[in-house]
Image (cartoon, rainbow, N blue to C red; front, side, top):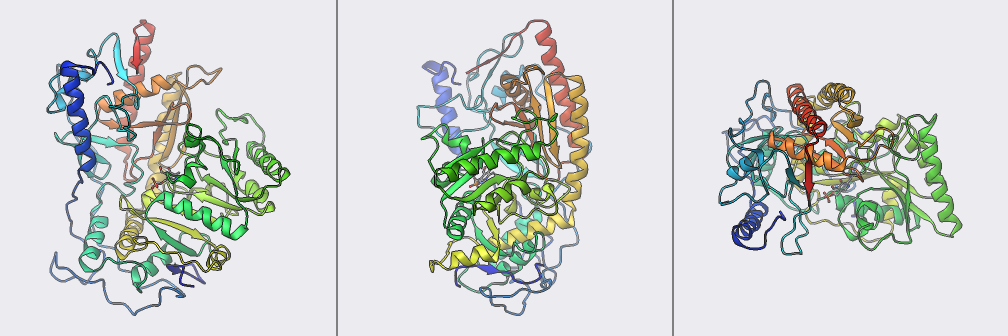
Length: 577
Ligand SMILES: Cc1ncc(COP(=O)(O)O)c(C=O)c1O
């Protein structure tokens, strides 16, 4: 069929008074600056170290090393292709030890300092300076004249980032921020090898996948080497949303069914089809479609079945079975179960091992397929394994895996991996799959470079060791600060669940926002997730170091200690919308 771009058989190888006067003017400036932030692109510096040996003069445009031509559509890829050798050197992760962070501006309160950092501002946008009655505006509460559906981080004082390198981001004043949340810059912001691979391929050819090209075949081969053997058909796309939308089409075509079961609080993308299967979104919109069915989030800290349950995996899987049964009783048929392998928007949740296997049995019995969304959590982030679904056990293999974000280190690449049976059913429609940009030579060169860097810098093992070190430090913090209810995670995917009190485990939402805001004053970028927006999430670029972990936890400790002192002395941590 002409539908598959590549196929791999066989060995898989302030809103503060912004009404009038200076504040109104400042708000206008802010809106203009926002526009500038959105419109601006950061240009990465090209670096040396091409992916392939044999390049002549540095900087010379060159074609990839010639290889025997292969038929990409019906191609059988066997063995390891003559892939370009990884380069001899170059790391995108600048050494962190002793790295000086920009010293805080002395003599100013945090909010005054923020003001001083923002050029063009004549008066502080947010209320009085820090101290008793500290005021922090909650993320997302600021809006402009209405209709502003795009949110900035830190709306009370947005940052204009102009450069990124490794795990660091730099603002227009040169201040260095430690990035603890950007899992898209997987192998490090602007990694020189990834930038170089894109640049070199861009100089030679970038077209669509209707021509034969080695990159797409090599890339499918390399991805297949990371996956269970039966996942050997690859579709290339441009975004995680596109990948999940295609997964939905594949599932429906293969099963002949329509309905979908999802986990509560899930987010699977911004397309209409995916908003429909994202409780995180549809609850605020039109609500739940009749073909969408929601099962409880397997959250063993705050969910239905907790850490004291003898078999939480079985108990949560029975909930899915219950949903499946009730769907069938209504005469409806299930096409797919969609789940993030580790639900991130749901609050950095680690489903109990064995849950997916049991769910897959219930879903398969109902004639549906299991879709593992690895868009946030794949590519070695979890440390022990390359794919997060592998945490569930060796014997678990999803029918469809979707990839995005980290796959291209910031370049728009995405992929759907599935079985031949599913792909054949899709082919049988006779309707071709075509994607203008998906699987282009440049996208595939970028994807290959990301895999090369992961391998060369052993970032999966790095994530495992730095992640356990960070978890250990955070657990020590939990023992010290009662506000920390739970520390959970694996590799560099970690959540710190802040609570009001241990008995109720009520989310400490305002406190979490306060911590995020204070961390930013300390040049550390952190964020919250979970339905209560109280889970501090760590999912940094994979080159995040042990020193970074120590630095972040020391600052968090100081902030939490200071917060506790304020609470003891009855000072307000006022958070106002
Ligand atoms: C789990 C998950 N799936 C899918 C998507 C959609 O990806 P994209 O924004 O690249 O379309 C996201 C984006 O945040 C996500 O977190």
